[in-house]
Length: 74
Image (cartoon, helix red, strand yellow):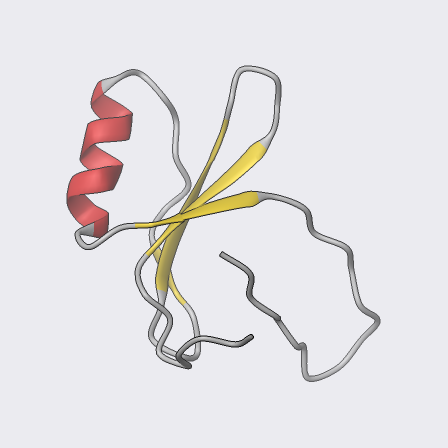
């Protein structure tokens, strides 16, 4: 998944992470948490996309999200 995030003000801040799209974000979060992995809270972006993040054992940030309301950018 590739998505472009634009902020209304301020400089661009690099953000590198993998992302996985799921149909049921609550079930995905419960599954991850039941494995002993800490997650962020589920947040909703301006386009209606819901997301949470985890860190793998090496510290890599991973995004778990629903489908974006903006559609696909190519």
